[in-house]
Length: 330
Ligand code: GTR
Image (tube, rainbow, N blue to C red):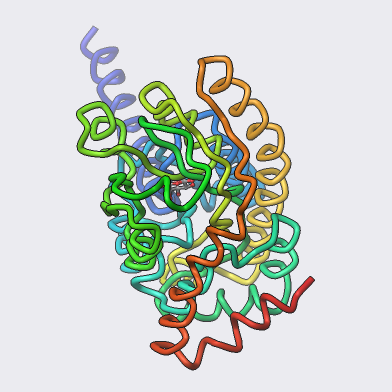
């Protein structure tokens, strides 16, 4: 009896010991990944696939884990956390990146890209590498580029057909002064706000509207409280799959190769899922009664954005050639 008991005790001790060794090694390999979107969103599925494949191919030397729904903080916060290594990887939109990596502000100039193909062409080529270099200087290694469709204006009041329709509307923008200027150029009132607060602000009237692509308009449920979606398609902003540079620098060449290849595969998957997901989201919001209108005269909006370009180039003369190089890529 006594012997049996002590055997059990020994066994327990051994297994507890084994467990803690196991959890130590898991801890050492776990990568915390930030994601703003809920599960099932195209980006979320792509990140999950990245995590799974990296774990598999590195035989769990690296175990990326994706934390969805911005539970690890809002985007500007998460950017900081990834730069200082508190987070290991993330999918970031280049919009809120502007205040930190000034080159990326170029990507927030309205109507810069003529469409998603143009954006792919630019970001997958040598110009994309220039952005990646700028990000790396600030502690972020951009391994691949996701897309985020085209952002359009939506609001609780009316269909927007002309720039004048925006006058006086309180519109939420992402955290970047360029977007404040963008809405003010249309005589609207811009409110920078984190994504997670927008739904509530639309219901209480703190905001009249916001701007985003179909998948985000749908998955954030903003469509439940914002009846008009107008196809201004004023912003096409790439997103990155970024790794903390401190983490990246620790990797062996073999693991770097695996992580990079899987990040590229994840981007390919995300882009595929995006096309499908975007159409599905559009249908969901339409079925729910959202009024979607084409904007016939987009040039009218584009013209209003010229002062933004002029001011931007005046303040950042060194970035003018980057803008023209993008415009000339086609
Ligand atoms: C989404 C984007 C997010 C976030 C969000 C927002 O389209 O994927 O990263 O930037 O928009 O409006 O804050």
